[in-house]
Image 1 (cartoon, rainbow, N blue to C red):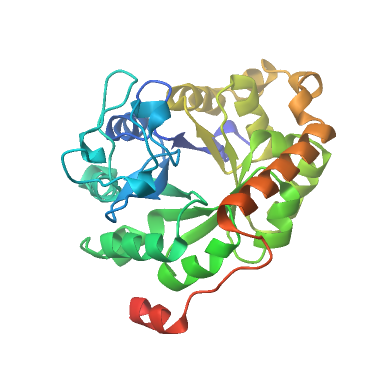
Image 2 (cartoon, rainbow, N blue to C red):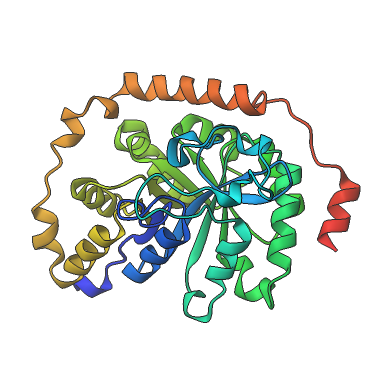
Length: 316
């Protein structure tokens, strides 16, 4: 097999090119696209007045210095979120989902995929109907936009709403626990977007093999170290989610020129010298994640399903 015949992981910008620009901003998304990323990833919350906002945290403090939960703040108005700017330079406005879609619908960007990280603090019914309205306003959205959107779901409660409100979007599970991924998402998603640590141990190895056997795609996050990027290559991952898009794209280009020589420069000792790749950490991560998901979105095994009458209206 020649080096050019190898299929190497795609590059998707985690919150854009967020090592260089403020995370989850149009500047960060545009930088990742300029670098050559095949996709961008971002997070969504909904403001009190019904605007879908690209933002990671449920609260505004960490990246803007402002106070309050997004769901309790209006987008519009004198004190609206629309006026906030990031703390990190160059200071940027917070984009909306509609603005991000407009960026992706520019002719020069219509090759770029969009991974929407659906935070479990959201009301899935409200969020997905708002998202559908924005998507459906785009010309030729069924062919030019919908196939590029990947919904990332943390809590199984969101699966039925995604199927009902956004049936044309591909679905992934985002998580840190392979056991939760198997139990709650295996039959309902095409893609598993997993934390690097979750795939580095023995069960991670088994999970990767099971995904490949079942035709499931594997995305790995957040991969910023070159050694970890090369491990994703060894795993046969489909997508590397990274803050450092240029680093991965440069390494990938070098691999295409001389695969064996470049890969041999990066050892694997870190897999045995990093405590988070061992079973006690994996078990702890599973328990913490399960507790967090249930505390913000309800029990993993008991939740309400969308009403069929609304499903028919949206599907039409």
